[in-house]
Length: 286
Image (cartoon, rainbow, N blue to C red; front, side):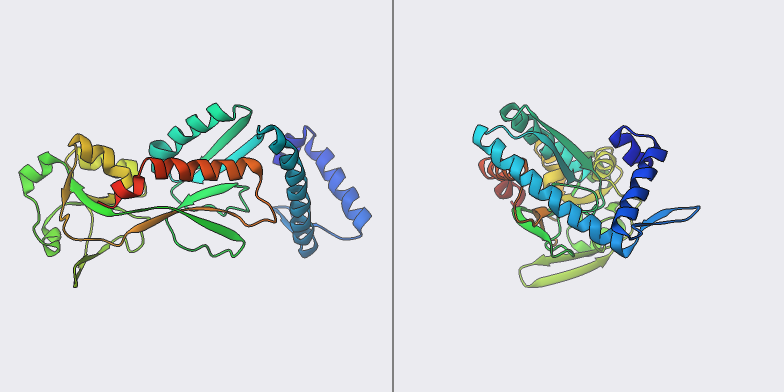
């Protein structure tokens, strides 16, 4: 209620009066009130869904008008991990806004997946292949390898493992939000090796993992798109590169509506084009 009041430029009591009048007009309770919280009733959930569709239709009408002038307006909300946002999203945003300066872009950076619809995201960059919500459309962006790497200083001090089973004798830096983060499943040709691992450093952020590895704390496991710059600069060196960990597919996820707003369509196409032009998948799967 407080945030609604701020958005509408009203007092909280003013918003409450509007809600009460709406409920009286409809003859139905929309919000269940208690001393501790507010929650939508079944009727409130239905009205919310219908109202969202009505607003989407209005946005489509605006987008159709805007399309004639090729100048999308409004705010585009994009969700992505912190690492992807820093390394790959911000450069695209900078170029995109040069083309469409009337458009503002809000980046919701998080290493956990926000619900796209509940959080009002226009699109999100994911590294999972499917979405639990069938109302979400997925468009493939790129595939990336997951690599092991360490600093030259660490490898000079501890040596480089020659086989996955030797990792149990090394210091590992692990990402806790990865699937089965404490288990590595390697493949080389027809040979498969599973290794249970534990980390001397574990964290939920890829940038912290890279910093720890650059400082010589151990061997990391990260997607190529996060550590490519460090590899090219020699700050990190590949480890067990002839073995493959399960690869990740990066996708663009966005709500499946009867229409996709112009700003969203333009940004998705622009992002895909930038990745194809830069040959990111070719680089990240080497």
